[in-house]
Length: 437
Ligand code: PMP
Ligand code: GLU
Image (cartoon, rainbow, N blue to C red):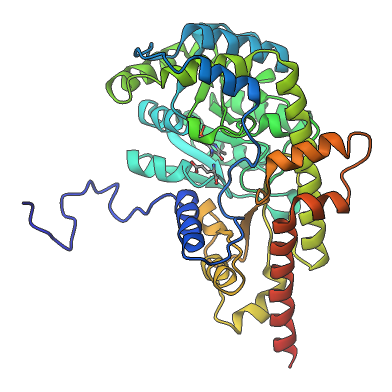
């Protein structure tokens, strides 16, 4: 038997001290609390509330018998259907050879950082896993400043001032929009300017567009249109198709970066081998033109827009700033107007803020610290997904076909969102009153 030691001396230095990913940890914590009978509002983890569209589920049923290992880069027919999908959706011309499929895009993000020798550049805030992946591999992370007034967007000027310091340094910039955690996105002009800087400094632009299909009005535009030669598009089925647990992600490379795709696939061949066969066969259906899928997607966007707008309005009324939600299912509330009141309760940072809100109200949020914000900043991520997406879709289709999704719809379909937000409101006003006293 191995001797137990308190100090894990044989752990790789890069892994020592790392915790489980914040998103997965909050999910497990909430499920644990719920199993103990506690009431929990699941605004922490970011998982689609909607079911996988029926034609895609049926396709999986049909392919359950597929038992063989598939090609490392992915099933050719699936890669073809993804190439066709980019043409239909974004007018981008790719072939199956430009695409690599994986068990979740997270895995490819890791492989890319492993294989490409260069710094990681990410705006703060950014999704929780980019930076830990770089640290595990031993890459340098450059966080780029953003500002609340600009909805925490990466600006071309900030990006350029970083690149100018060492213009020929190899870099991967991860550019994620609609954004996790802010819910904001970029206009065409902004995309063009980012693309111009990326071109000037030969940047590998990893455009994480996993929430692209969940742009609330269906108007997502890929930056690959403006920097085709250096953009890798990252996407998958986890968000728009509601299939996070299926683990199906993909990268789409420009032909000039085929060498990078090949290098990723070498490492994949020595690690995960290939992506689940039945899932890949079923995913072909997800990427094909299909009226049922399109309709569900349209309704999902409509619902997310209504729920996001509702929560945004409530927070704004409380004096909590958060960018107007434009896509995906996240908000990034800033509690700093309550700084004084909160500090009286020993709340001085985002971690303490979220722990206290969870223990006092049952509402789970994620501290902005996990997204790379300064420790003492009182911001957090709120996922507005605690509702039954299947029910919401049914009701939006039947009762709200020809009218907008109003307050009655929110009350009827998203009572847990309403109650969770009410509890935050109540918690904050109690803090305010006690402070005045
Ligand atoms: N990027 C972002 C911004 C995410 O929120 C996630 C979480 N699903 C991923 C990438 C990874 O997604 P997956 O591995 O499920 O494709
Ligand atoms: N992307 C989801 C989130 O941000 C969770 C899945 C994950 O982190 O892998 O909450």
